[in-house]
Length: 357
Image (cartoon, rainbow, N blue to C red; front, side, top):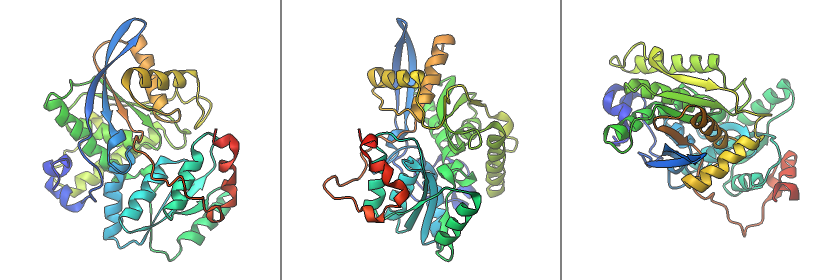
């Protein structure tokens, strides 16, 4: 058992029934920083999940440790998942699935044109991912799934890796943070700010912090459409995750959901998924200049914008920013010509000049 698997250490039956595939380099570091706003210095703590693993970081690795091990034990040969063209989840899933010996299919949908999307597609092409355009009517999407999954021994991972099993990766992350607080690496924050995309990260973290007995608010900043991230859905996922942990180990405490402090916020979403705005751009710039963090405008920039807003209006006590954005370089051979004949024709637009500048 890895010392970083605090959930298994506290609840051995969970460790036996929910084993992990070791992918992450845990615990991820925490640091003490400060931000200056209107000549006032504010203490800010940072949890560096951008370096969850040496190959590729970000928040998805913690989820994949549980999900890929379950797929392996169920004798799956192929991993399939979903995302937008530039999805970090799709990249992380493909990378770690291939490393674990699985074949991988990514069902990808369109997103707003922006620089860098071609690099995600190049990664998939160079690493042998089967890319499938996923769009159109419900009937068309169901037909696409049947065509590419039928009789292929596929293990299907939901959008963002969000499921009760994926959320457990962040229950463990909450316990990990509690250990770092206990060892005085950082003081206990009053709030944690995290991007809220498909809910699994925020839900698992809120459960983990409650399990550790910490009275910390998890500020979950919605960055996707409301159908993917909402209070009712978060509640259902939280209750299911807690119930299945209770079923795995009789010593797991009952009534944990009532002790969680998950606050779902919508006001920083803006005009749509992937759409930036002045508050987000300011947050990305300030994070780079004062915290040394390379954020982006779709997820982490919006979470940082919420943190800045609250520091200006409700100063006092340290707050923690949970950086979920990978900072490892993407494994791409820039000298290798892209095999565009393997690319779905719907994705040719992402190799246009407008998407590369």
